[in-house]
Image (spheres, rainbow, N blue to C red):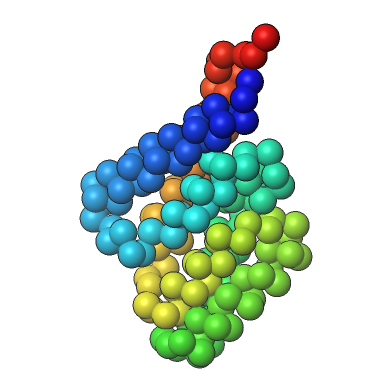
Length: 150
């Protein structure tokens, strides 16, 4: 199979995942600017075999980064300084848990920057990360159905 076929399949998957994210955000009444999954979608759909794209890294990375953001918010209040602390703490927690998913760092940034409510950790973060991990896993299995060269 030519690499371009795989790349196209993965790119279509990323587009489908983004469209689904937009629909689910609209249904949940969540502003798109507060949904932290665009770069996670690009990573998980484009390079599904790397460690950072695995379900554990996606889900734990987003949850740990969200926790980091809330710790920064509770300790320093709303603002850019707290957002910087949130990102640094997010990196530390993901490294400590061997759950490195770099796109999740945005959670540690958004929580203290916007003063997000604790329920944000459940929706969109936990629910969204779980759905993304499931979708990415199922989509990547579809690559086996693509026509083979030969």
